[in-house]
Amino acid sequence: MFEFKQRGEILEKFLNVLKKCPLFAGLSDDEILTSLKCIGAKVRKNAKNQYILQAGDCTDCISLLASGTALVIQEDLWGNRNVMTNLMPGDYFAEPFAAIPDAVLSVSVVATENCEIVEINMNRLITMCSAACSHHNRLIKNLITAFAQKTLLFNEKITHMSKRKTRDKLLSYLSAEAARQGSLSFDIPFDRQQLADFLCVERAAMSVELSKLQKEGLLKTFHSHFELSPNATN
Amino acid sequence: MFEFKQRGEILEKFLNVLKKCPLFAGLSDDEILTSLKCIGAKVRKNAKNQYILQAGDCTDCISLLASGTALVIQEDLWGNRNVMTNLMPGDYFAEPFAAIPDAVLSVSVVATENCEIVEINMNRLITMCSAACSHHNRLIKNLITAFAQKTLLFNEKITHMSKRKTRDKLLSYLSAEAARQGSLSFDIPFDRQQLADFLCVERAAMSVELSKLQKEGLLKTFHSHFELSPNATN
DNA sequence: ACCTCTTTGTTTGAATTCAAACATACTTGC
DNA sequence: GCAAGTATGTTTGAATTCAAACAAAGAGGT
Image 1 (cartoon, protein in one colour):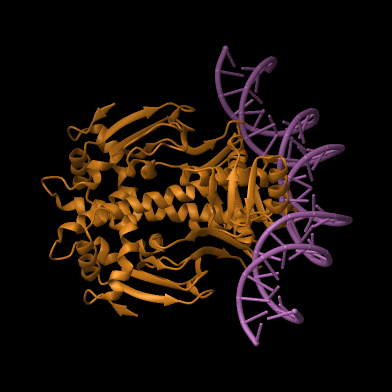
Image 2 (cartoon, helix red, strand yellow; image 1 turned 90 degrees about the vertical axis):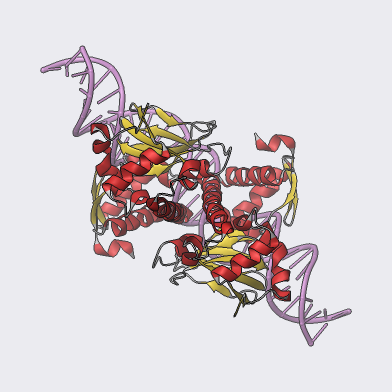
């Protein structure tokens, strides 16, 4: 754990990722680094399979995934796992819990690869600094947009989950993913078990449906790669 | 449709509701009215069963429900209805779509009673007014908190929906509602069909489960009133 | 009071999903 | 190269849900 005290190699490394994060949209490289210093961002690392955050924890920081991949999950007492979202470099998480004082995490975050995380204190982010730096305004607007986009993402997940049949959940998710990536040929960020946990169905039943869909010619898939036939989205 | 040009009877009528809205937390009555004028809030009315907003629409306004009740729903081509949330006076909606330029509504909002709605332009809300009124800062912080709470609300819904069995979905939702209302005896804002659409199950199957739960002594219910037995939350 | 419409609970057979196996291919580490 | 572990697809019977129909109770209007 260290602070962004000065601009060094390690900051440069993250800059390319942070630039892609909607939180820093419209800011120059220098403004991003100045902001991180102004806000007092910190870096932490987590090894693969470690919990980055655990349900029951409290946090007042919005976390940015700088490298690696992770999953936001919910686990119940019987070991059932619900995958809320996947996290890629540039994604942020824990922001709603950080924005509400003393909110207890209802989800856990698990590293699926070795991860580096930039933590930004939410209070310092939304409280105007005394210097009233000009980009701070921009940051706050970006934060609102980021929240809105996360809400839409959950909206989408609910849309998929609201379908009654495994087949329809799959097609709903895969169509949305194709739309997001702008191509009928795309990779998903899940393996089979994770996809099943994301859609809240049995992996076995899902495998059966994927096989059927392939036999019917609606799609082709190999591991995490999918190719939808143009009429699969009807 | 009219604007908040001056403080009049009609504003007073809404004030009691708006005061309860987290968006205006920490603002005095006068500050709320000043803000609404500053931002240029407008009022619209919708009769029961009318669409307040429809999927496919665009809006740049966050909407506050001032009176009446409504449902945020998704409908697919086959008439399947997914109830995203219910809306009570003081609740707000459409805010993620208003916060993202040109975002198309993926949900509809239907009045379940006659409704009055206060519409607030999102751009004017998040853009500092030239007067830089002191409460504007507070409003923006409130907006961020409001977004965060909405995200947690969707999180909860996903938690309920992620349960595989109707019974578990019911218990998950009812326990959460009891916790929210701070009592094992409470009313829900849904009738049976709406609750089924909220949990994404068949009303018939849900009715059967509710009967079973009553026979097992885990709860009592009559219409929208529920009483959980203390061991129902295990 | 009467009729109609709405809401809720119940029943039934068909369709779907669950849950637990198992087989196969592929990785990973030694 | 080999062994152990992981990921994926398949199969099976049991459990659950769907979908449609119907009955009963209640609300609302005339």
